[in-house]
Image 1: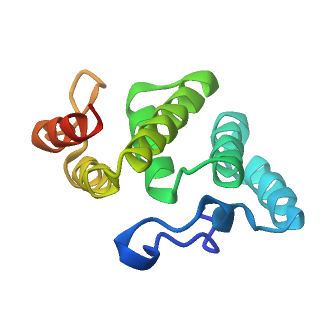
Image 2: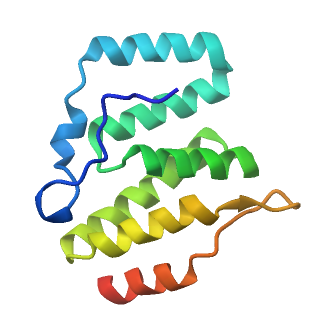
Length: 141
C-alpha cells in the first residue's frame, strides 16, 4: 500500500519539494491506514508501514526511500529497528546532500538503487551503484 497523496514531483529548479509539503496529510488518513495495514499485513509489515508513514510526516524521506528500505528488509529480514535505521540513513544522506547542493547526485543514486537492487542467493541486498555513490560522496565531502 502506498500513500498516493505524497508527490515526488521536483520543485522549481529540479530540486525536491519542500519537506513540509510531505507532512500535510490529515491525521484521519494516518489512523485509517494504520488500522487497515494492521488488519491486512500482520504485525511486522504493519510496523514497517507505520515507520514509513512516520517518515513521510517528519522527515525528507520519499516513497522511493521507503520502497528501497522495504526491498532491503524483505530480502534480509530486518527488524523494525533495522527498518527505521534504514529510513534514517536515507534521511541523513538527503539532508547532507541538500545542505551541500548535491540533490541531483542523491537522486541519481536512488534511481540507480531502485533500478539495480537485487536480493542475492544468500539473502543479501546489493546494488550496482558505485559510480553514483562515489559521485555523491565527492560532492558532499
